[in-house]
Image (cartoon, rainbow, N blue to C red):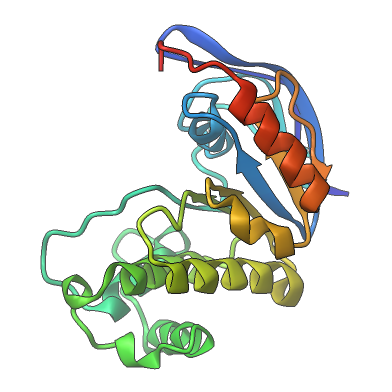
Amino acid sequence: MPVLEVKDLSLGFEGKLIIEGVSFAIEKPSFVAIIGHNGCGKTTFFKSLIQSHPYKGEIFLFDQKVNKSQTSPREIAILEQRNLVNFQIKVKDIVVMGLFRRKSFFENYTNEDFDRVREILEFLERPDLYEKDFNHLSGGEQQLVWLAQMMIQEAEIYLLDEPTQYLDLYYKKVLFDLMEAWVKRFNKTVFCITHDLYYLETMDGYLLNFSEKDPRPQVLNRECLKKNINLILQRKPNKNF
């Protein structure tokens, strides 16, 4: 049974059609790298999955059609490109906020919730971050905190929009290793928009190239990457984006 299936999906942005009639299915668990030129619809695709961007066509989660009028499905957690925090807050409080969809409006976080925060930071091998001020962390450490917030949601599908964009080489490798662990150890499905194609050579999974007119999942390997990189490089830039 596919964890995610889209049928005849079409998306527009600023009055222009950028994805037209796309259909594919992804089985659980899987790692799916999403690549393509700027403006080809990668982020817009993510927004359609969480019901924050209008679309035509159908989206199915575990064979159940998603209602376009509903809020973001609980099965999906998303990490967007840039998350800014300009006030003082501890790491533990940012991570535990990932439970917001499982709480009623006035319900407090419990000791068990914060125990779960500790467990996740232990898994990330950074339990030392628990009491630290988020704004005193490096960029790589901050990204780990956002990933911890994703993990505590216990979703089935993780959407990561260029999670390594501002990171150094060390933290880029850490994040790709973490995504691989989510798939292999926890049976999650991970969609990752990325331009860091170097790290994909060693990943097991699939590639979706939104620079193609009709993107379909391709098995990730060196030849697949070479072919798709050439396809992107041969494309003329679109001045509308």
